[in-house]
Amino acid sequence: MTFEIPENSSQTQLLNVAFQQQIVFTRGVFNLENNSLKSLIPNDARVLFFVDKGLIDKVDELTGVIKSYLRSNGYTVISGGIIALPGGETVKNDLTHLKKIIEIIEEKELCRHSYLVAVGGGALLDAVGFAASISHRGIRHIRIPTTVLSQNDSGMGVKNGVNYLGHKNLLGAFNPPDGVIVDFEFLKTLPDRTYREGISEAFKVAILKDRDFLIWLLENARDAAHKDWKKMEQLVYWCAQLHLNHIASGGDPFEKTSARPLDFGHWSAHHLEEKTQHRLSHGEAVSIGICLDLQIASILQLISERE
Image (cartoon, rainbow, N blue to C red; front, side, top):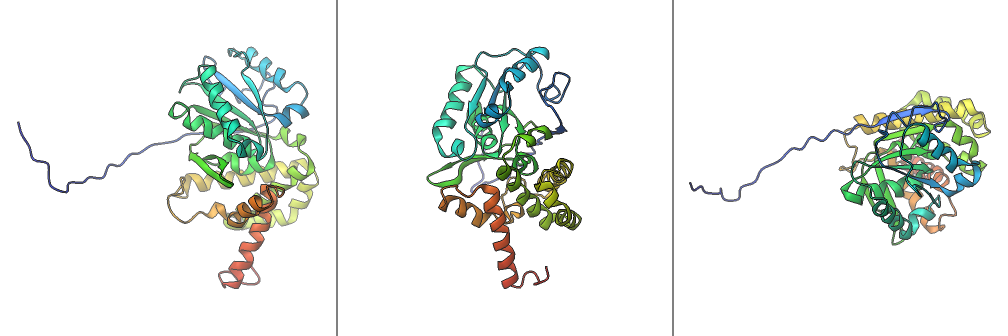
């Protein structure tokens, strides 16, 4: 049998890949009776935890609490399976930490059916998520965001990455987590500056997506910033829902087009972070970036002065 290949032949192959992730809002994720984590990870899976060192320093016996939870719920506790990493941009700026995560994955014999669980702020989630994305071409990972910024914004997203050559998120991958557990109790561990800065991303999403949310923020954000826990939980939940809805139904979850609404305020924010050697935190830089974008939009007459 012979056949001729058509000259200049081409074809388009459509691949439909469905991603499913479970988002849980809870309190006390590591309380023995809390089933949030158990609902996401089968207890015969190998599991590694990477935890923000600052969180371990602030939450008494956190490592022991995690081990107790795992044992009580039938998981095998891997020796050395709870690893402390620095939080903030430190974990993303130094590739030594990314290399360490990958080496531990190999040392502990994790495979594509294993799980990495990242417990910390957005930077730590980014670094661990990126390591999960490139190890064995993808290890399942769970995020437990512990800051306002990561609970209402970055922890909900599909992006992972680290900084390189002085540029924020130059190395990265789009890889949705298998699950996200938002534990409001962790917000009580935050220093005031870190607690406040996450509100900027709520304003970003509200301005873009929901006038009612923006009005609510104008009326309640100050109370939330001053430790009205109920209002902060409402802020986080509302913002997270809008973020999730955009990713799921916005038509471009992996940012193939030039329209990237959730980067509102970010083009200048990333430059500000780099130019200040991250003395400005991400949330603080975004708050400035939002003001710049609104001013520019007004000058270009894309929005009215009143808006």
